[in-house]
Image (cartoon, helix red, strand yellow):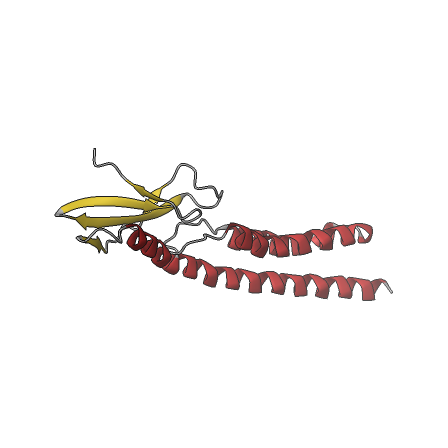
Length: 165
């Protein structure tokens, strides 16, 4: 009977580790999407570190007594669900293109402006309203022959004009 339990827990740990590995692969794809569509305004490192800690935990359960395995598996399930839940809860409300549309909406009545495409697409924010978002979208506009910079908060959608001083 002991051999059966040992094999069961061994395969259970491997199965949970495989699910965490799938979550890491999914996290990598999501990070690429965040970089492409959200210009790296969100720190999504938890999408890798949480599942990685889950995988490491799977291989440390050999030292856990069978009575505590329910707690360990409960903790692993919690960690497994934590990354997608945090992503859902803290995802930016506005993508780079949606932020650009907010600039266009604000500039509706301005006749002469053009948004310049630059490599620099983000600007540090002190408080975005989201613990994982530390940057806003940066837009450089040519307004009546002068360059003006705007920041859009990806959480609230508020548009801020940077002073030229």
